[in-house]
Image (cartoon, rainbow, N blue to C red; front, side, top):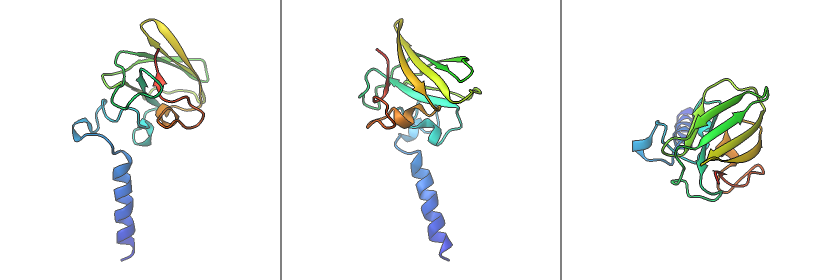
Length: 137
């Protein structure tokens, strides 16, 4: 009998872990810009690009090129969607060496990236030594 309340609490916590987005955007590529995509999804790398390091979550930039370089110096090039989100399930050798974003021909190097959950640290408030959101100049 005591197991039922514990199970109900666990299910509620699991359901809320990927919350914070509209039902219209639920489980599509435009959902939850700025949140840690890998908390719920099985991508190898994912994040959101914004115009500034302290931008609001609804202001991701579309059409930005993101270049991820893995531990074997293999580049994976992605393009942000309408919400500013980028993601891939490609096999990447960890730890990742670096990431860069390119906007209007201007490249912004994001430095070393230990893992593919970009928004885990590049969030507001920033964690893990990140300088706020991933942003393109």
